[in-house]
Picture 1 (cartoon, helix red, strand yellow):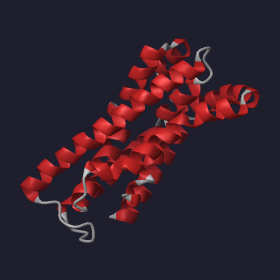
Picture 2: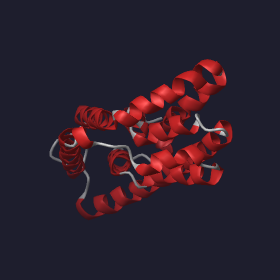
Picture 3: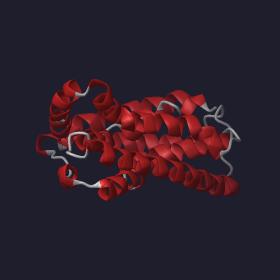
Picture 4: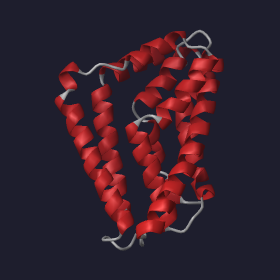
Length: 211
């Protein structure tokens, strides 16, 4: 069990990923489409971790990633570069906060069926720059600690669990959740820029604390 990468699961789902999950539980076929979304997320994370593990292995084979305890190692240099990219992304979200709008595809999820929900679960992981950075960080960490992708199973499970929280709330609290979720959805839509900045800051802190 590779515990140091567990906090990265939070950054995997914060942002449009969790907004998608919230939107889907406010649709008429909430349970069916949410389960399809979760299946997409689960597959995407498993594929992403494995792919980035081999990317890190190829890079490490060429230059050597070194040890996590060596701040000057190639693996840690990669992490510092990722930190710089995240800082730039946070600044971009801050500068554009006045005109920020949620992606149009989020609104289309209100009419999503299981097929679209499944594809959304795949794409919000595999096409989101922030999630690709998370997956690459996980891959680099696994290679530096001489672990296999199986060591990321707790990370995978926690990511899927976070994605499932809106559905679990709906199943457990029924009417209260059905009343609250639309308000949560609207707040997250109008404050997407703030959520993105918070995700970047959290991710930077996690990387720096482990580098």
